[in-house]
Structures are given as structure tokens and as C-alpha cells.
Image 1 (cartoon, one colour):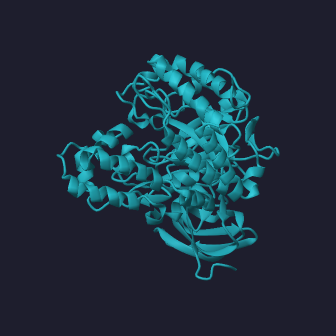
Image 2 (cartoon, helix red, strand yellow):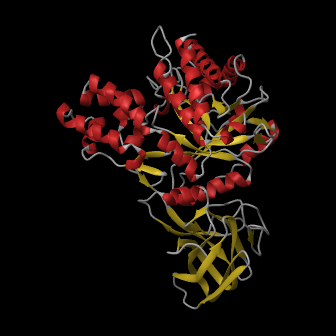
Image 3 (cartoon, helix red, strand yellow):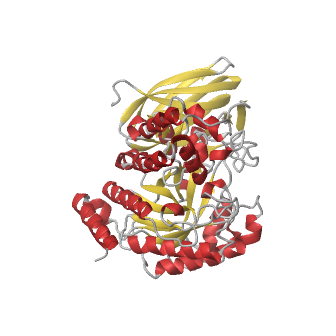
Length: 552
């Protein structure tokens, strides 16, 4: 028996000894029409989180400037500042500490059911004229799979940085800012071989949900798509054939050109177990919930599932609105990323080391620092990236899962349509903001040019209402507050949750926060309806805060 075969056998025996049965009993996922189902035929909606910056470091997650915008440049920065020998030790420790079993346990505990690790091919396959497979990448992936199996978390393996680079940008560790995967057939041969090796390794592993063949290939703005997009689907077909030679069981997911979202390159599905993927970021100011009808139409055309492989990088208003939008259309998603440095819009934030500004300065070309000074900075980073030393933001996770306690923006009413998620008298007009395909008027309240965020609310007239699907982790009472401004006073408003209803009147035309009282929520999903009974009102948000006693 070969060393690698023995290693896989020992890993499998370890997993079987420590795992509960539930994660194994679900079996392999596969596609069935628009759904993903397990071996019992039960539908599974993948709600994942991206493990970015772990196996493929990205400069923006380190606060780096242009000279440190991708893995190979970050590696040079570290080597310059602490020396090659210390740098090699640093990277081994970094990959050991950044994602651990504690992260996977916490991901499962918070309600996610999948992870999407971003792979850099260089960790699995060397570069140069005589490429050879590298053990480290496979061992790290083996370890992740074992943790995920133990905690019942699916894995979508994401080829984020292919040999040569598939985008010609920093996100794929491109060596020369060109999509050299498509410029050199040798790189394509290596990618096919790498995927076949990965598939052979995990061909009997059901906790792997899918193989994500290429992340965000060939952007339009650089001209890469125009030059090479005719190669993409044939390359996908070739990789799939290589995978199917060793693995008939796993789903395969395909991304279009231009950051995943241009699917005009696809003909009909060429495999009976694949789904298509798009990425969804809302960076507009003021906030705008972008239309997804293009992808829904393609789903109908292809009769396959569709999935959002990346969404995030904004704020709680968008997080609540987007995952709700996806799920109302039977689309799973993966939030990007799990953690990064010095942020407020991810589940976890990494504290920068005390002298981290000196490292940032170096990435901007401002001199070289003494090795004795910088070595402790990187040692501090190795401690700071551990989950127990990171800052947790429960409001971010609650927004992603539409849970309370937390603030519910009024414009994030449900997506079930007229008579179910809202009622307005005039359905002929469309909102000028945020949800521009629907008739509930969304009004801009404040737009801070220095901030990434804006404040918007909805305008309701007498007899009109909006409804919200809000989850609670347990049966619990919450204190309710509503920020509201009468457009024409007096205003009378009601809020209803289940069989409970509260009424309140407002005489003053200024903004104010009203407190209907303590509201009881059942465990799971609850329907909350706010209705204007008299006058017109601009409603900004509803906030539900935990009480000291909690239960009712």
C-alpha cells in the first residue's frame, strides 16, 4: 500500500470512530430539477460561509496596499520583513491557526450547513517546468473534511486560484496579471490533473457537496472574457470528464465569466449532476437590492439548481434582504467571508497586531523595517487569528439568518408578494429605491457620503401594511421599538405577531421611537405585520431586544 493510500485509510478510520451517525446518514447530495436533495430524496438548501484568506490569502483582508494584494506578493512581504526561514514557519502556523476545528464547530453552531474553502493551486501543485503535487494542501483539506464530517457541515471545494490564474487579477494569485490558465495549455492540463486527483481522493466522501471548478473566471473589464470566453465551457467539459472517470457521485458547480455572473457562455447542461453559480454583491450607494430574474430565467432554461457562491461584504440591511431574497426563490447561498482583519461586517473580526501599521506601510513601498522589530508582530498575528481571540458580531449572523435579537429594516419586508408580504392601494407604481421592482415606496432618509451605508424606510398610508418573517432561536419575549415619522399626523399604527396585537398613536410629526411593549416569539419563524390604520407614516426600522429574563 502506498504512503498516500495508507494516509487516506487512517484518516477514514479516524473519522468513522469519532463521528455521529447523522452526518453520514444523509449520503451524497445530487441535483433533482431545481433542487438539491440527499439520498433520502429530502431537499437540502446549502447555507454556507466562505473560508477565504486561509489557503489563499487576499491582501484586502490584511489591509495591505498594492504590493501585498495577492498570495505571492504577501509571501514576499512576510519573507522581506522576517526572513525566509521564519516566513516558512509562519505560513505553516498561519494555516494551522486560521481555520481550526473550533471554527467549524462554531460555524455549525450558528446555523450554517456548508463551507466553501478557497483553494490556491500552488498549495497542491508546484509551479515551474516540472510540476509535482504538494502534500501540504491535500493534508489541510483532509483535515477540514474530517472536521466538517464530525460537525455535519458540507464542503464545496472552490478552485479560487487555478494554475496560471483564471482571471488575470489579484484574487487568483495571478503571477503577471494575465489569465494564463487560458493562454497556456500546460496550465489547463495541470488543472485537469489536479481536479482528477482531488476527485479520486474524495470520491466516496458524502460530506463533500460539490466541486466548484473555477472561481470568477475571465472578467469583461480587462478584455479577458472577450479573448478567451469561448474556451471556458470546453474546459469545464474536459475537467468534468476527468472527474467522472474517478467519481460519479458528486455535484459539480459552474461559474460564468465576468465574476461568475455572465452565463451566456453556457449551452445546455452537459452532465446530469451539475448546477450553476452566480455571485451577488450589492455595493450601490444608496443600498439597492439587485434583480436576479436573469438567473431565474436561466434556471428554468437549464432545469438545474442555481446557487449563490458568494454574497456579503456590505452591511446588515443588505445581508437580511439578500438571503431572504434568495431563499424565497429556492436558492442557497454562501456568505463571504467567515472572518477578516479589523472589520465590522463579518461574523468574526481579527484584531490587528499593535505595530501592524508598519507592515501596511511597507506594502505601500515606504521602506523596510528591522527584522527584530517585525518578527514579534507576525507572532502576534498568529495568536490573533485564532477564533477564541477574534471579535464576534452576533448582529451580522442574525441578519444573515433573519433572526432576532436585532434590528429589522422596514424595507426588508418579505418576498412573497402582494397580499402576503405587503398590501398597498396603488400597485401600478414601482419604488424609486432599493426594491425597484415592487410597489411599496422606499424613501431615502439619510445617505452619508463618507459611509458605505445608507438609511432608507418605507412609506405606508392608512390601510396599508408590510409583513416580515422573523426567526427566534427559542421561545422568548423581546422588547419591541419602532422608529417612525408621521408624514401626516395624527398616525395610528398596529403591530401583530401571531395572535398578539398592539396599537399606538403618534401626534408629533418628528422622528420618534415608539415602544409597543413586550412581544412573545415562538421558536422558529414568526410573522410580524405592521399596519398604518390612520394617516401616513415613514417607517425606518423595528428593533427587538432581549429581556433580562428572556423566556415567557
